[in-house]
Length: 262
Image 1 (tube, one colour):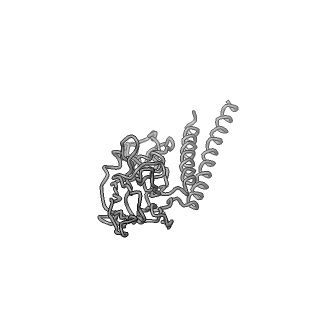
Image 2 (tube, one colour):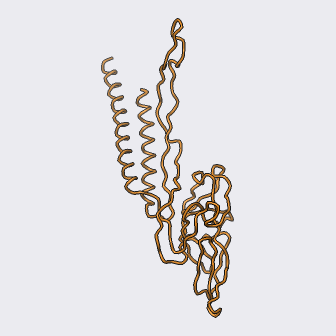
Image 3 (cartoon, rainbow, N blue to C red):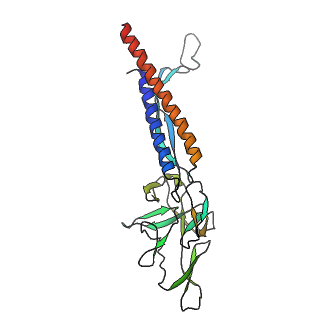
């Protein structure tokens, strides 16, 4: 195979993967707490036909040598945990983290997952759960005769009950966790992440203390995807794809001329 054909093929594959990443970002532009992904590229192995610094006669060395690249590949997708905009919803169980941190959720299989999506609800047992029914960890249960709920910026949950003269009662706390490397978390879908060796162990904290973000009630963190930025990236990706297509076409023309000549 002509080397240019192989190199062009790797470029087409890489641009196709990048376009898939962009399309996923755009699809989730309205997903609460979503964090955009970006494709990370690296060049492939080089064919060193003449090594830099090799001897080239009497007391002379090659200054650069001859090294031919073999293409590109997508080595990773990096999730960017920059903060999204905060939107006021006036719903008492909508919670946003203004800064670093994640909510901890209890999964049905007993494992723990983490999310930035603070769109919570009550289930039939009065537990605070997310849209898929996964409860907060530690569990917070509201009594049946709850009149109002207040969640402080430190995550402390206070309620008032009918027949209790509206005396506030503390029933729990929304705890936050953080990671040394949030980009190393494993995305499970459903707006949740799992701990990995790359993310490091979870670090427990309290909202507004020791670098953790504050807990904001009746607010939601929107997706950090910028539609304009993604559309510009899509245009540059399309043009890069076209250029790699031209490379494949040019290599094909060279091989066709060669075979016709011979």
